[in-house]
Image (cartoon, rainbow, N blue to C red; front, top):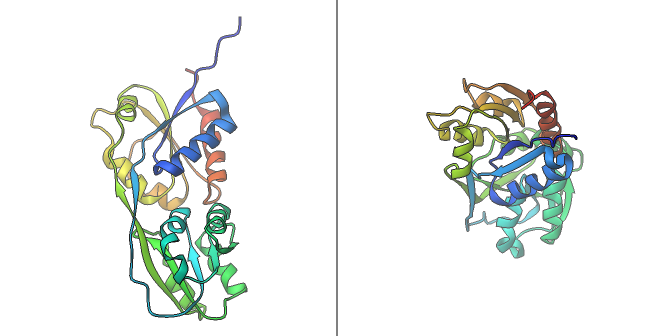
Length: 243
């Protein structure tokens, strides 16, 4: 009689909506091989900024959360939206924008805009914390751009079931999507952590933000997107020691 395969726990620390979507993607790809445990370390709160008194030819979004936060401002915004990736572009299209996706990271976004610049100024709608300085990069290629902060992400404690897992001598997969989340995760770990952490970092900057955090394994995604993070999770999963 064949024994059932034990599911490996994976701690999903993304904000609630993104975490649920990533957990769904994990289940679709790995089935019962993984057991997602959701514990958001950040919770979004939308803001109502004053926009610069200027006519804009395009807006920039680097997250779907920024698109949602910008919905109340839609009547004051241009229809063209440059987006960092397909997920953000899909959200922008649903919000009524004419979206264009760079299908990459901030560097790809700047390159895409430079290859087909809008006829006028650009407004970058973003969160409080961002890993890249798009305004400087756009200025370097001769484009006028302003920014407005439309949301922030408030830190959250680890959930009780996540803390319980971390206190057990288990192998736990931990995908981390941003340097800030990596720092929050490190700070939130209980002093009596016994789990062996197998970490998938979205970028080198995310891995660097972990500092000297002890871990059993660490892999860095090949691209800064969710599909690449699924690949990174698989790399860790196949290397897990048998239960």
